[in-house]
Each structure stands twice: as structure tokens, then as C-alpha cells.
Image 1 (cartoon, rainbow, N blue to C red):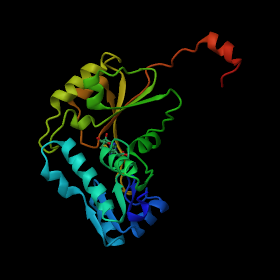
Image 2: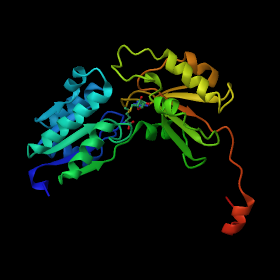
Image 3: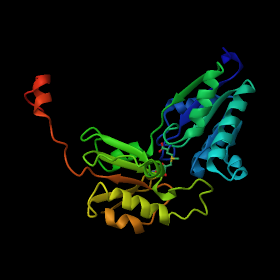
Length: 262
Ligand SMILES: C[S@@+](CC[C@H](N)C(=O)[O-])C[C@H]1O[C@@H](n2cnc3c(N)ncnc32)[C@H](O)[C@@H]1O
């Protein structure tokens, strides 16, 4: 066991600046030997730098690679090496740190294999904010959550009787840097693919949770036919309402001895 030589705590800072930071996460940021962070807005970065003098942004690794996958690997390696310097390291990622965020999870798994002590603390993800802002219970119909590019290239099946959440709809197919990315083809392919499961006039919501306490979320309600031309950002998430309630099997109800459902 290498735990006396260094350890890793991966934490999520949530979506809304400071309001989503748990007291446990705050303590790790303040008390770790070193804090490394990858965030999407400047106020949280400034707060971390103020609260731990030995903190460092991981952004410098972003310009060194053409492909995003190589950047993620570089971030993982950097975190692993910081822990191997016999430090207690806290890695901060926005939202929930293992939700559609590969680098920190891979660092924890790599260090686990080598016998280091690791821990992951949950954070409030954009999906949590979506459930709250759109007033949705994912349990009412079941809920599917797909990364948009992954859905498209793997031709994943959507169950239209459940809630559906599609991530990264603003950067479909972006394997390289995000600044130059043209999303037009990806969005058209996605719209056509979704039309296999839903009517063109099916209601959809393009959602962006507020990053600061004084701001409102962006909630654009429209129809599937309008998705192709929608203005999106790299933070946009697509929510699709269930098209119908799946029918109940009377035979299974009987076998379970259920006579009344709600
Ligand atoms: C790399 S993932 C990071 C997700 C993050 N770990 C989380 O827990 O929300 C980026 C994607 O998350 C979603 N996302 C991030 N910030 C968001 C926000 N403020 N509102 C809605 N969706 C957001 C978008 O789908 C975006 O393309």
C-alpha cells in the first residue's frame, strides 16, 4: 500500500459558483498539499487559488495536443505524477467529477491499481440541475443519458417512452480543439437520427444551467424539427420528453401480486 506516499481525492465543484460546493469538498480543497483543477469559469478558479496557495490549473495541458483524447490522457498522467511526488492531491473538476469527465476517473483508477489511496467525492452535475430547473423526476418514466456523438456513431437505441438526455450536442464529432469546431453536420445527423424515434413536432428542450447564483438557466422549448438550426454552446444539453407511457404487463402484475399501482 502506497497511501503514506501520496493520495488523490477527486472532487466536483458543482455547476453554480460556490453555491454547489459541499463542505466536505471545501475542506479537501483547503487542506490538501496540492490542488489541481479543470473548471469552466474563472470565479471558482480564483476562489481555489485564494484558499490553497499550492494550486494549479490543468489548462496548460490543453494546448499541447491536437486530439482531445490525448489531452485527457495528459491530464490523467499529470495528476498521477503529482500524487507520486508523495503529496495529498485534490483534483477539482466542475459538475460531478466522473460524469462525462474521463481524466480524473482514469487517474483514480490508475492509482488504485498501484496501491495508492484514492477517493471521489460527488458534485452537483448539470443533469442534477436539469432535473431541478425542468421539474422532472427521472424515475417517473425511466431516464436515458447519452453522449451525443456516442449515440450517433454507435447507433444506440432510444426508448421514446423514457426521458432522454443528450450531452455535448454543441460539439458533435469534435475530436480536436473546440474553438474551430463546426457543429452543423453533426447536428443535422443527430436531428435525422432522432427523427427515427420521435415525430418532427415532438417537444424538446435545449438547456443550460446557470453558472452564477444571480443568473437564470437558459431553457429553450421547441420542436425536434427546430434542432437542426438551433443555436447551441459547448454547455448545451438536450432534454427530450417521453413520447408516451410504456404499457403495463397484466401478466407480470399478477405474478407480483400487485393489485393497485399508485
Ligand atoms: C465534459 S461534460 C462535463 C459534465 C460535468 N462533469 C457535469 O457533471 O455536468 C460537458 C457537457 O456537460 C453538459 N453541461 C456542462 N455544463 C452545463 C450547463 N451549465 N448546463 C447544461 N449542461 C451542461 C453539456 O452537455 C456539456 O456539453
